Amino acid sequence: MSRKDIEALQLERLRFIVDYADKRVPFYHKKLEELGVTAEKIKTLSDVKYLPMTTKTDLRDHYPYGFFAVPMREIVRLHASSGTTGKPIVGGYTRNDLNNWADCVARVCTAAGITDEDIVQISFGYGMFTGALGLHYGLEKIGATVVPASSGNTERQLMMLQDFGVTGLVSTPSYAIYMSEVAREKGMDGFKLKTGLFGSEGCTPEMRTKIEENFHLFATDNYGLTELGGPGVAGECEYRCGLHIAEDHYLAEIIDPDTLEPKAPGETGELVITTLTKEGVPMIRYRTKDISRIHYEPCRCGRTHARMEKVMGRTDDMLIIKGVNVFPSQIESVLMTIPNIGAHYQLIITRSSKFMDNLEVKVELINGDLLERYKELEQLREDIRAQLRSTLRLDVKVTLVEPKTLQRFEGKAKRILDLRNEH
Ligand code: DLL
Image (cartoon, rainbow, N blue to C red; front, side):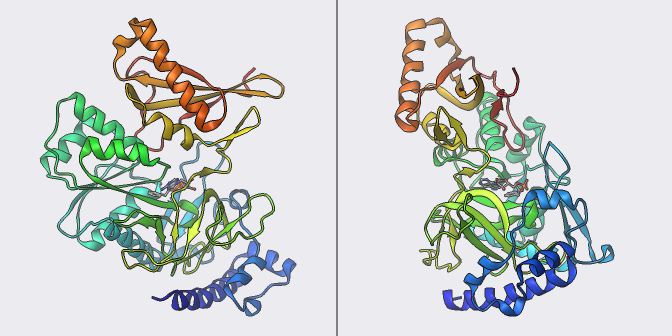
């Protein structure tokens, strides 16, 4: 579709979904009434800025079914976010929602190069998490052979990768790097992997290169969230110059997270998304807290759907250390290029006085023998500190630890340890 046709379709669907939400979800009815907005008043796509926003707190306040727009007999599936604190976010799907979801996921898998010739192992945890079943039905739609391995039991995962001649791997980047290391340790090679469909958490290009080298595959980044249905919201094609957004199902905007004003195309800010076709739980202007920017020019692959850049971080993940803004992804980028240290790290934040936060970066050595050689060890620590200082403009404490002592993750990694409220 041309840009003009995409936007015409989005406008038509936006008007529809606003009217739909207005009539079926009391939260939206109240908000729209307060703002004096109705579907008829939306004349152009930029009028989206007059619509109310939705936050995670709004969803929590209406837990579990307050945002559902259809009676439960029309809901055929529930999913929920994996959040460890508070109540989860609940997603409800009608039969149409499941069909559209499988279509969107089939697109991102196709864009990554998956065909019906592929055997794809899904190493996301099956269950309430949207990742595994989301990828499962999208891959089946293409005709790929699905291996529903779920997460955990890494040696068995590797055995299946090898014995079943698996060509595609679905997992979080942190689980993929861990699996690749266990494979190396066990002396396992000869995998037939070609494609990695990774997502559900950030991954720097540097970390991705490590995974690609270890497993000899081509990896794409895939984005989505429970609130919007799960994976399939956006994914990379073979050119990897941004993640194509399924614009016929989602209207994406970038806003300034402080003023809430819209940002111009290409500017960085918080990603806000409106679902255009969801029947079960429609979302108007959902604030994702993910930071990115959007490019609207067509891609070299021929797709005309806009591309969001890889998520740079979350507004609530940004650390402010001694007045300097730091995203964990900046640290990962630096660490992944330094020889002699592994792919695992932890960021520890402490508070030494009322206003002073400190950051400690714990990194694993590849070779534990280095711990015996003080001078070399100090040199390496100093190098890491200097490189971090030059990128972050901030002095951090660097601690080198023995190989295989930091925690490994089978799902999303939790690399930040915030001890600020501990004393
Ligand atoms: O992680 C959905 C998903 C599953 C996406 C499988 C891709 C593949 P949630 O558990 O609700 O949903 O987490 C959503 O994870 O707001 C982002 O902060 C983060 N996230 C998801 N994908 C990416 C990505 C699934 N590709 C939250 N890059 C989102 C960076 C990501 N962050």
